[in-house]
Amino acid sequence: MAENKRTETTEGRRERKRRQTRERIEQAAMTLFLQRGFEATTIEDITEAADVSKRSFFDYFPSKEEVVFAWQDAFADRLMAAIAARPADESSVTVVEAAITATVIASVDEPGLALGELIHRTPALKARDQLKYAKLEQKLAEALLLRKGGDPLERPRMRVLAAIVIGALRVGAELWQQRPPSASPQDFAREIFADLWKMLAEFGDEAKTRR
Amino acid sequence: MAENKRTETTEGRRERKRRQTRERIEQAAMTLFLQRGFEATTIEDITEAADVSKRSFFDYFPSKEEVVFAWQDAFADRLMAAIAARPADESSVTVVEAAITATVIASVDEPGLALGELIHRTPALKARDQLKYAKLEQKLAEALLLRKGGDPLERPRMRVLAAIVIGALRVGAELWQQRPPSASPQDFAREIFADLWKMLAEFGDEAKTRR
DNA sequence: TACGATGTTGCATCGAATGCAAAAATGCAA
DNA sequence: TTGCATTTTTGCATTCGATGCAACATCGTA
Image (cartoon, each protein chain N blue to C red):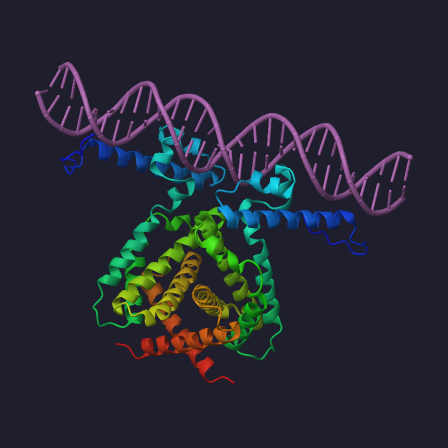
């Protein structure tokens, strides 16, 4: 396996080389994917470009798709950390807005946001992408529930809140790609959330005063 | 190689046999999937059980996964129809609740709901499953937007509403599987939506009266 | 230095998926 | 019925992703 938690050992040449190789594979794969498409790139193309054996690829990544999504675990981890960092007495709504905004802003420069196009036009990747959102939603719900003391009655409620917010994140990500890079991510996030809460209130009222 | 002018005739034996074969493959595949798992079932297992050649499988389904999800197109179609059937002056909230409730009730007896377990424990299928929800969400948003006259300003709003409702549908589907079959689907759907709208109003208020 | 642990590679193999062309089944008309 | 065109089914070869295994290389350390 990849990362091994070695307590007192200095990172030797082994670990360094391994990390370098991993990065070389990742780099080569990304370049080729963006250049000629995901399906049109074979594992052999990648390993040749990265100068490793075809077999070694699977020592670093469990599948071709995982290369594309490897970076995305970082986002989920950051989000969890951002949630944990909020004061305990804040409302769920406030927590989730602050945490997501902070995480998005911290991740907006990362590579991977450029992959949106590639993912969008590759069915297999699109499916995997949605799965990522689902996992994120699950984690978010769990983290929010934890703040509520793990009360089982709050569970569906937090699941729905997570679904709403991640849904907004997805829609927001789409809108972001269509906007020229003029607007700052801060303002954009603020606006998205303001709209979201307003909509929620409106939909709630609409349902309340109906019939 | 002239164009055939009389192809629009009645359904002959050809079409009938083809549909029968398709159903035979589907049936065999489902049985084997539920019996020994998705990955553990090869195409050859299926085609042997269905008594067709291995090659013919791909004449009927583009991939192994598609067999599992073939039935799900029907749900989306029904939902679209249910939306179209609502009076034009109803609010989006009312429309979406009525349409989804009707569609779920009409589909609750179908095979495929039994597949939840299988899908849940097969990563490849889980990804595909999420993609299905994404497509459904997209379609729902489009249908809702159409009722608003296609006003581009309403677009993000309807996208978010669709995300919320489909999110609730996902959570609801999970909860449904955990409930004993004592409660009727009608009551269950009513309860889910009542909770949903209440939550929306609460989250909206929470955001409004904050800071 | 020598030994054990870890990393890398080649090789064989399986299974999904596609292209192609021969063979079989079907529909149709004379 | 028979002959012919169209569609369907099948077998075969091939590509590619993925896995298991064993030989080989590299590295850290006793």
